[in-house]
Figure 1 (spheres, rainbow, N blue to C red):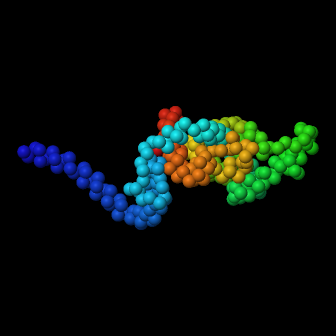
Figure 2 (figure 1 turned 120 degrees about the vertical axis):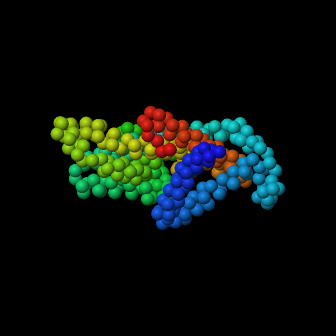
Figure 3 (figure 1 turned 30 degrees about the vertical axis):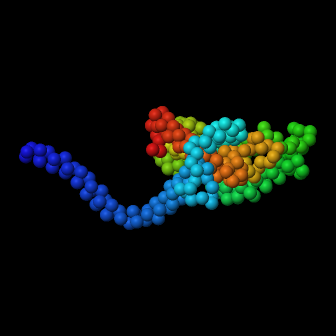
Length: 321
């Protein structure tokens, strides 16, 4: 009987020690916990509380009825979703523009960051950096107007230059060609966000020890070799983390660019899943159907995030989880 009591005491003692350590740490860092409370509340209210609205996807939702008066229809709206050809067209457009944006949106900022890091004239470097990230602060409404004007057939800069260089004989209606829409959106996004994304990589490059470059120069390494063997490996963790996060958002790219740059002539190429939810869900008063589309987006985004995280964790030993 005594042996059992001793073993029980031995088992319980570590648990009490762990609990006491937790509370002592919490007491020591009480101000940090108090400072985090407003952010925790904000996340709960705006990120977790709205999940209650997902129940609408399983109801024939009527705004005039209370929650308990709604008619439950199960997965009927999801079945309707997967039997709609327009949904698969929107999914194709979303994935195409997401993948193109992912490739261009990562390679170009990294290249620009490396080039700016190699510039020795600080004044020139600051001017280029400032000019490159200014478009980030321009709203998509203004940016879409600038892009449309530049690609216009009526005194548009792009057509004027192409005609002036005798590359084309007459102006091209860029905004009316569906096969060019994905490229236009990708190029517009690169122009608007490249400078801003470059800041992250420049900050990561600044964290690389200068002694590594000095040792490489002593060994006779060229500037290109220094970039390949020091700069890129030094920012690899940052690149991988940002890629994983971006892959998680492949299916949710928003609708602002597509809505503002698109028109009826390129509708088959401009409609994304978010626009599909807006037009066929909220626009037609089908709130349950729109909720089902958004649930699909969220579930696929979570699956992509965990899949990308697992793959990179296995290959590169780095992850965000």
